[in-house]
Amino acid sequence: MVQGMAPERPETSRRALILGALGIVYGDIGTSPLYTVKQCFDSIGSLSPTVIYGVLSLIAWSLLSVVTFKYVIVIMRSDNRGEGGILALTALALRTTSRTGRRHRWILCAGLVGAALFYGDGVITPAISVLSAVEGLKIATPVFEPYILPITIGLLLALFLFQSRGTALVGGLFGPIMAVWFVVIGALGAAEIAKEPHILLSLNPYYGIRLLIDAPWPGFILLGAVVLAVTGAEALYADMGHFGRRPIRIAWLRFVFPALILNYLGQGALLIAQPDALESPFYRLAPDWALLPLVMLAAAATIIASQAVITGAFSMTNQAVQLGYLPRLSIRHTSEQTVGQIYVPGVNLLLLVAVMGLVLGFKSSDNLGSAYGIAVTGTMSLTTILALVYTITVLKWNRTLAALLFGFFLVVDLAFFTSNMMKIEQGGWVPLGIAVFVFTVMWSWISGRKSITKEHARLSMPLALFLQGKGPVSCLRVPGTAVFMTSDVASVPTALLHNLKHNKALHERVVLMNVRTEDIPRVALDRRIEVTALDHNFFIVKLDYGFMDEPNIPLALAACGTKEFSFDPMKTSYFLGNEKIVVKHHSAFTRWLRHIFVAMANTTLNATEYFRIPVNRVIELGGQIEI
Image 1 (cartoon, rainbow, N blue to C red):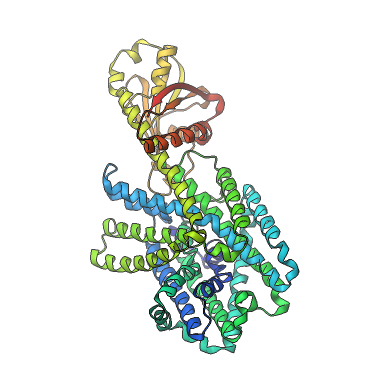
Image 2: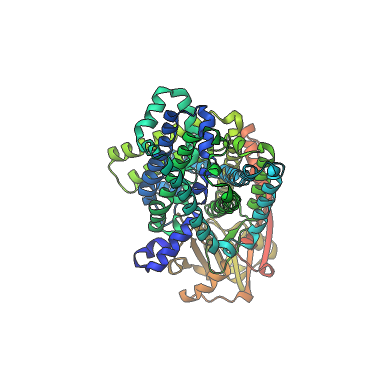
């Protein structure tokens, strides 16, 4: 959406997008200096100047290679009509595969695992970000220490309760606050660098490589903390559809990246001069008089970072529902002007419970640091693999060059991932457990829907055979229009057969409605509707939506008037199937997955609400189906 208009956008609009990107895209990675440096030196257990140079070199070159080179320059080229993110990339990679092939299954599985890991990251980010910011209060005075957890819980509770009102209310403040944040952290770092200019030597990759060679095992463990500097890199890609490629790149290269480098080097310079500042090197950069204002600014910045992750979880859920990877959920749109402003009550509640549990369970950002990193590095690795598949099969890049380029990215990603796997016992099991739960839910839903479709195909009657028979001619035809929702327009919907069997009548006009979700973000209105007229006043209406669109059946039917298909909403009835699903005897594992699917199917959002169908025009017909 934004992407296609970028070249013609006036300078003032581009500046607004850059400012907006600072608030939404860079909140997570922008607040990493709060805890990254301390985590790094805690993990390696040494504060010698050589080690400090090596750690800072690894941080700087991780930002350069992973964020700048991989995401900003390369990965952001793999956009799905302007949209990014792991599910959008999965849809791109699936385009050249057969739905029944093994390759399709493996690509789909990789995409689902990446999406599941995203939720694991989405739980930890609000907890560690806000907690690390509030912990700055105890640096100002120990009097605040007993109140760190209550203040953190209060801020997070307010954040999650606010979601139902929509982020549009404070969205205008996000960019300016984060702009101030980056200016401040850059200035604090630059002031310390001026006192210890030799810290600039750490920009030489030699020091990072030397550290890994001299102490391979501690260096390997260290990578699990260094990766904290690049958490949030996926947001650059995932939020591309909101701001466009160019504003995100400009914001990173001209503003965010320099500010982060200055702050990390400043913390290193401080540690060389004052090793005892390791307790909180970020806050020790500030003079005493500026400490409390910095804590308040950090709290605001981390809340913004958390808001971005929560919004990302809502957006990911919406895409998964549209693509058929999750059951229908209640999704509320909180802004009439902004398309992407949505609120998912069920996801918000689950995130709230999980985040509160993490804060109360781990109690400090140091402890949470052990749980952070596995999810995001797993998602990064899978993004690299899917991007390689897409660039070779769809973009037709040279296989050798693509393999070398993405092979380098994958080596870096897997180094970070395997290092973080060493932290499973210390808390890394939390995001992995969340990811396993989410993946199981999605895989159960996908496999269950596939079984339902096969069973319907086995029991259904071909539509052509039905229309050739005596049924449509001999039965009573009553005034009005009947709309039957169906996933297979070549077969007679079960609800239609039930209606004919029990009521012995058909409406004078029968519409078989098929709603499809394409692997692109949005489908233009002029190509959304396809109407096919059949014998006996039967019609097939196919509706195509993108995975970011909002299905609305009455609105679509009203638009059919432009295709010589008149529609009177007061004379239209919608027939929906309401089937009871029974699980057949399977292996223990398959049966377990089927029961999860049945539980979700029984609690999924009613099709009436999801498709915006008027409740007083709906007729539900029940039945039973075995899977």
